Length: 180
Length: 180
Image 1 (cartoon, rainbow over the protein chains, first blue to last red):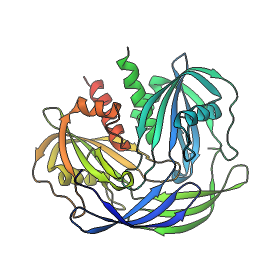
Image 2 (image 1 turned 90 degrees about the horizontal axis):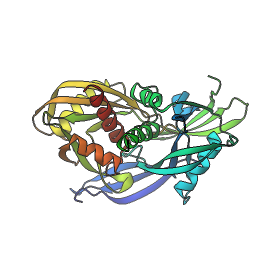
Image 3 (image 1 turned 90 degrees about the vertical axis):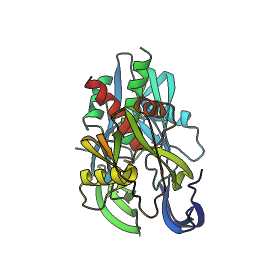
Image 4 (image 1 turned 30 degrees about the vertical axis):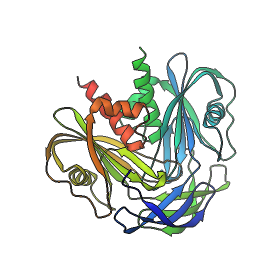
């Protein structure tokens, strides 16, 4: 590790409900000082729920930064310190009403490495059993299902743009094919 | 589109070199008002460079939010209004020294849909010709190459965590396999 940047100053600019923003100064390996803008977020969990007929459950919801509806897999924000497996099972239940027999860790992703320390964990859920959808008070979303290969096609052709959804679906495809 | 959130107030909290942070109020479809924290960023471009021997060029650089080196494909930030194809060709040249005969658009990703409007465009570069690496003054990175299937393995096993790199490599794998 010869490329380290050492923090020499850190200022909390904004302490929000969702993000914290810091303005830092860091020393590079050549001794020069650079500014670093840093977002902190508690992170999240997303789940690829596949039923016994090979359909995947997707959610469509309005995403404020893009002023449009986006198609995603079920997901939610971690509380600080919360176990991501438990959070994933809870979000799956809340958004789709499903519990599952099999819950396989697919790894994690760093959405925005240059300026945001958020981490998202991914799971594959199979053996689904359905109860009732139970959303948060300020959460509005539509759940629908498509054949898994159709969701992969939506990722390849740009109908699915969200990063966690693209990665989790493509990793699932490669994982399932490797087991055939 | 029945899930719209209408902006009723927007306050610029921080106007940085990399990000802008807004604190907005939006009206939900049931009439209630919610706070929305919004990051704006000019977006970026990333490139999967594959040489005639089937190796992919990767870069390893220190990423401040994670306080460690991460493995990524070559990438760079767009200037506001800049053409993403030109930006991708420039970043490929700057970070690896390569020009290419073939530059195929792989689509885009939204890294952080809940609170950040950043968009990253992805390209596949083939038919590489090499000149000299030319980095920005505050940019320090190591370039190395691995067989393409090894890079896919690094994505599947968690050695590669960056979202744009995971998506661009997995989309490339599926695209190249579909053409075989």
